[in-house]
Length: 406
Image 1 (cartoon, rainbow, N blue to C red):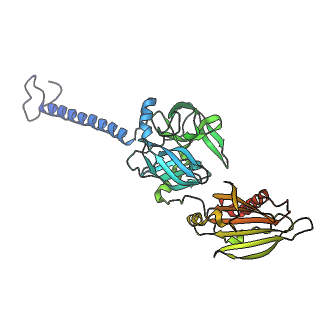
Image 2 (cartoon, helix red, strand yellow):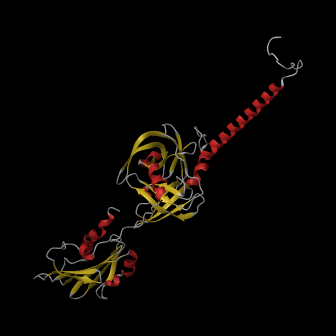
Image 3 (cartoon, one colour):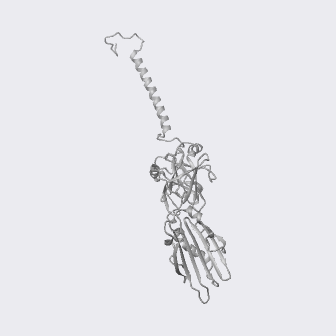
């Protein structure tokens, strides 16, 4: 007999398989089954933890359902300018939201509206005006943040812009494609470059929202271009900065800076009205100043005087309480107008008597209170309310100077 030799033992009966062969087959079957189970579990884990090499392609409806919970509407109460609205999205975990910096520029208060329509407050923890990105901190620690797509996006890639339903947007889901890379958008104070170009047409209220691919991974932040064509700032431009901000969560104070100069240092050096001469500068109301300019009478006109009263309070709230148009010299002044061009509050008053005409401009800019008077004995045709309003605008210049860089 050729083949296997049986040494020291009788060969098995004809037709009977060897026991070791059966055991070996059972072992192979068990190992193979375990391997299949491990592969299956690995596939499940890959889906669960987002480690699949090739993300699953979804329908537009599925993309919107996956992304929308992480998209928020941002409303910022803007200093002296109503309300600004844009979009943002949860990114990086811990309740952090990314958006465009100009959406929250000059904000005195920021709120976010989540996918369920619930409004909550948000703190500003980072802003980079040069990149036009800002990061907010919210109380949402449960909603899954968006995940950035790996690597650069290719031209022709199908993309979707998803908005928050509780916003001013007429529509919240838009489908399109990447049409180019290296795009540029001119904003008011800077140029944004290396942007992804798309054929999406968006509303300004889409600003700061996400653009995602067909697997629901974020490929960029919406930057509206000319005629509403959407560009996207790729994650490579903001991911590291976002992580750095989130690591420390330093809250940025909202609201404008207070004026921190003395009242006397803010007074104009002379007045642009010709032959007026400063005759007095004295303390007023504690930390304030009272300055008087006089123009002597001439053969044709009576004398004229300018009185300036200015006080710098420590806080905006204090100045708001103290300010009153009744700060005029006497009760014969009557209010004839107001303006929003001079700080936060402004009123125009006048007094006309048989031998005198006088005008007053009273205004408050944050923590600074100013009362300015222009009066003359009759006749003095060059003394008018418009002349005083123009002079007040000149005086407002140094008071408002520190808002230029805010």
